[in-house]
Image 1 (spheres, one colour):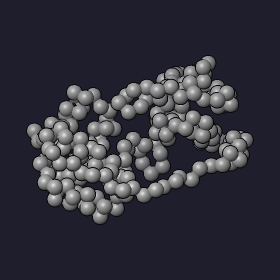
Image 2 (cartoon, rainbow, N blue to C red):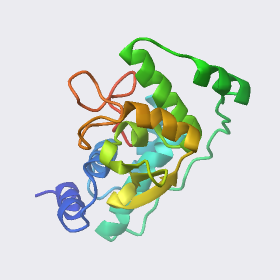
Image 3 (cartoon, rainbow, N blue to C red):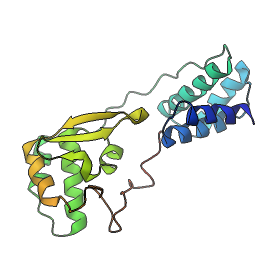
Image 4 (cartoon, one colour):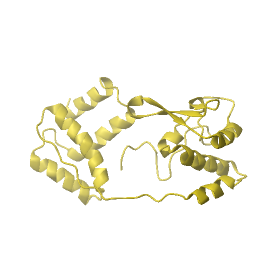
Length: 200
């Protein structure tokens, strides 16, 4: 068994990290390549990621995993973070949210899209968190969502009475169903691929 494999095995079975975290470590170690990197090889790894088109934020995401591996392996080397580009994401205005809330779609897909946007705007959830919600995680009586955090820890997220009215209309018979499900009752994925990726 290689050192990389041993690191992954310990994270999986001793640290009990999530499958998404395991995938993140595996992808990061592929960029690293070698088991006992020199300082030059670590620099080359960063250069290789940048040449491949990864943004500084994505490189730093990979470096967190690589540095965790270096610490685990007993290496004194660490890779410093890159300076990240400042980025302010575009947001909807209150007027735009109000207009969207007043939209009354007739199709199931339109109703689902409306509910998703209203949920994101009301709670501040990540898209991946919203798409993984099941109805058993929705407490309509107390207006609380139970969301799984990193490390499989739970957190409670409050939502408004207005969102409660919308959710109540859509509540299904089975609590096992996803709140935002496909016609086959499976979880939706974000546009362009699965929503399970830890970083790009």
